[in-house]
Amino acid sequence: MRAGSIGGLILIIWLVLGGVAAYERGYFSDTSDTSCAEFGTIVVTTVAGPLNWAGVNPKITCDVDVPPPSK
Image (cartoon, rainbow, N blue to C red; front, side):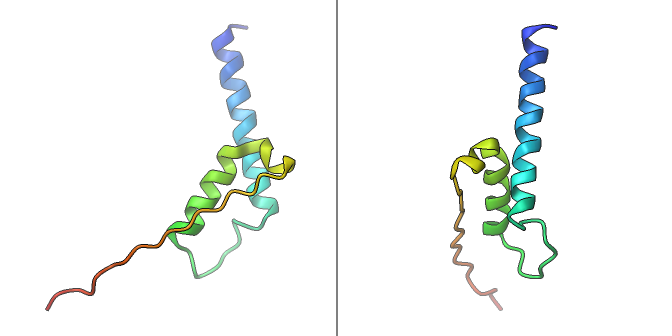
């Protein structure tokens, strides 16, 4: 097995474990209040992978001021 394929396998396992951590936290539940902050938290939790079980609790805030539409 080449070093590149081992690295790819480790990356896939890392992301799968991150997805499991996000699932355990209930981030994939069907709620109507989906926002960019919720999406960002899911992505960061998945990328953090196994670090989630070591106490890392990534959260994203998304404060966007959207102006009202012009008439």
